[in-house]
Image 1 (cartoon, helix red, strand yellow):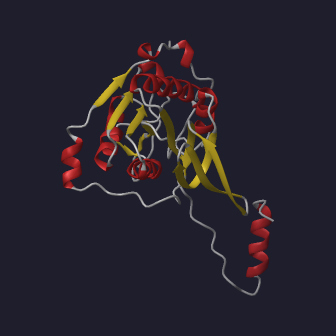
Image 2 (image 1 turned 90 degrees about the vertical axis):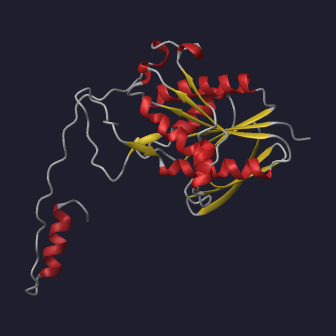
Image 3 (image 1 turned 90 degrees about the horizontal axis):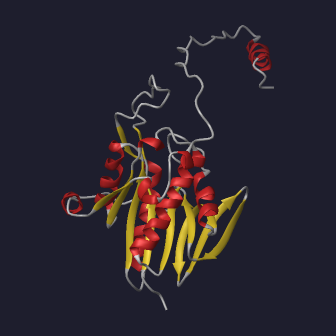
Length: 265
């Protein structure tokens, strides 16, 4: 029989794609202005649909990791429909790579599992983050939690205590399943995210948001030390004018020569 279910959805505060990205003096991506990652709205929608169709009590928690401003991603998730939010914020996590990120998030998920008291849990993530775009965190997170990883899902259904996922691999559509608990990464083909209305925004102000530090998770700065660091960064060069080809009867040969010079043939 179904029991209480805790759906933990990872959300990320990312630089606004409409603005130019810059690397600061500390060799970190400047994050003075950010938004909830668009790709994180799809797992959030999947979480809300699972909760709405669940036979027993289900709770959706939006979990983020990042600097103080990252709380904006949690607040937006609450407006969309999450029940509560958790913000993992610690200076030692600044500039965290995939290794450090998955280590810290696994500890945070385990903390929520214990403190939440739900009988089952599932973690939903986006297919990638708009800043890092590695798509590696879901699999690493699942490995650290010791649970199955169902990646690149374009459809997610919870049937009893079994997750059923449809995914595309090459030219094949796969249907795979795994028992709870599990980690699922959801693509932008999975659903149509809902938009908050004014009432949702007002209700979100009363939803709880808690903060976590590494110390509360039993982690030290050494335990989440990144394995990769940025050595150097410089602005990309300005675009130069393209090469115009006037067709005097040899345009085809000129194009072929250009492609060959660029190594595209």
